[in-house]
Length: 170
Image (cartoon, rainbow, N blue to C red; front, top):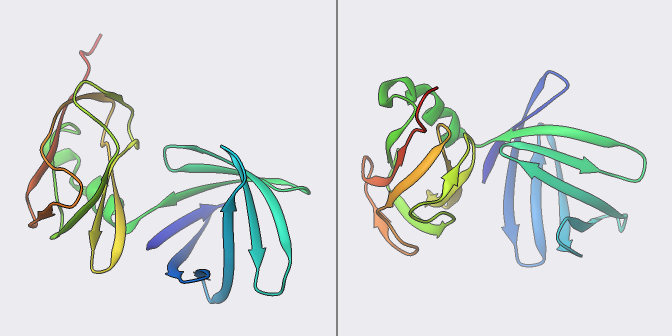
């Protein structure tokens, strides 16, 4: 998976590749092997290839991640490139309505159902394309009117995935 992390005004390209025993992570021009285990709802255990082990608390709100380490807390905004492409097309679709696949792929996971209320940036589903998982996010606050795909389904570029209606403006 490829992401763009924003922290303290800097944009850092992040690439994560699943390996049998953990993950290969590339952050900018640094690369390292990590093993990440869930130790609770928000608690994670991170072990680096040099044997260093760190417990961290992870909270997520949309694309903003709050990571609390023993010595500090950092806030990072993480966006996948597919979401950035979607942001550029929001005006064309009125920031609501029909959400379409921007590339061909396979639906890995659907995280919402008909009638669910969503906020801008909420993950709707995960689309695997070119061996990378891309989270499709809600372009605006609204209600899911219809989910048109299911896990395991293959979709073409431009295929309609979900319909969202915008809440009435006051």
